[in-house]
Image 1: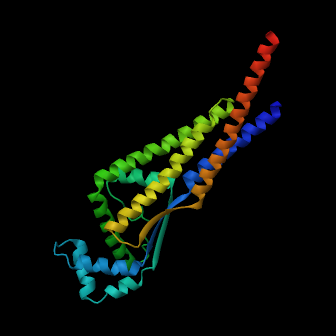
Image 2: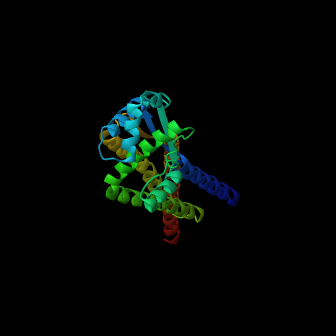
Image 3: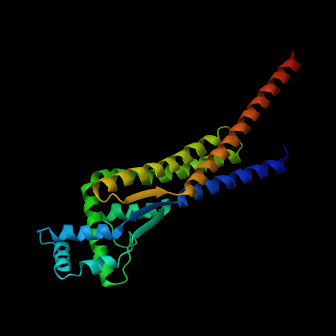
Length: 249
């Protein structure tokens, strides 16, 4: 193969690897919540029936007793959708591990008026309460998550280095990196959906995007092509060795 063709092949393969990694890390995991008004209504009732004297309980009771509950609920959207990429989640996880709680800005809750601020406080209080219940488990998951992102980047970097130096097995790090990134997105979406539907609200779920599929499939296609090149090189090398032995004999 001519040197210019080899350089072009390596450049295109490296570009494909970068696109795959960017697609996997930038594609969002999306939180969706349906029938928000019904959930908010039941949430206010739950806090209003509590007798612990907390600020949330007092505010909820005031809303019910003053007849403002329905006005509060009617100003909420029917559906909430929040999307976060791997990199955004990494920053969110870092803040959570540092502060042991989330802020309304972390959840991107709307705060255009006092009504929305009140509902934000209720939702944030519930979310942080649930996080505290599962704090030990979540600390392990977030630690694994942060470590996995570094491992994925290192695997892709290793694959590119092996590719540029024309080494065998350059396809393997791409398979492992892409499978780890995509597999973790599937795992985290399924695990979080199962947890929130069981313990918070049945109309909540987490999904991953088509970009994750695209990045994963691109990595598999790249790995398949590099594997094919390895096989061709191995066969060519074996054939050359046989010819050399025949000439020596």
